[in-house]
Length: 201
Image 1: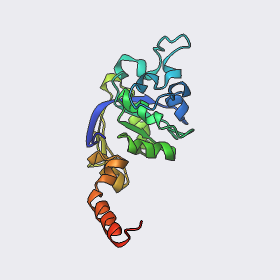
Image 2: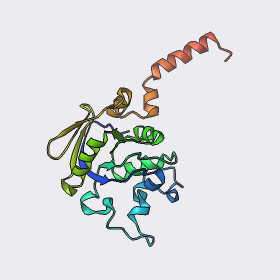
Image 3: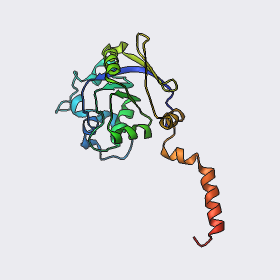
């Protein structure tokens, strides 16, 4: 998993509440277990018309936001079903950070497992960030995970809280498997001890 230390990029505004995982990646795209290629399906029902043509009014289709790395979204982002394809699709599109006032628990946990930083801020701060994000190609934010700060295009800073353990795995780029392998020596030592003491197992 790619480390997340500091991210600078365009932030796209998505001021919609209760964006569920079916909106993030519709069920038609769930036939694959690959983490790549899902970016084209991100918000597909909003990004494309029924005939497959591009909806120019959807934020991520606008030229100034097509390379967005950050999403500033409404409350309760990622609710609905527990599909891990949702963070896969965001990451494949290029989104590395989502900022909201709250997230659904399963989606929130899945973000950390896939290298996406979900940041929870109060409504007052989200309003400021949404305003920053509305500036088009000038909507550049910097996320400093070590300092736990979001810097806006005018130099203003917003502090955010994060669980220390989750901060560590993001800074180190550790998914669940890599986290377990950090204890490989202790696991091997324990298994050797058990085999010596209980050879019949």
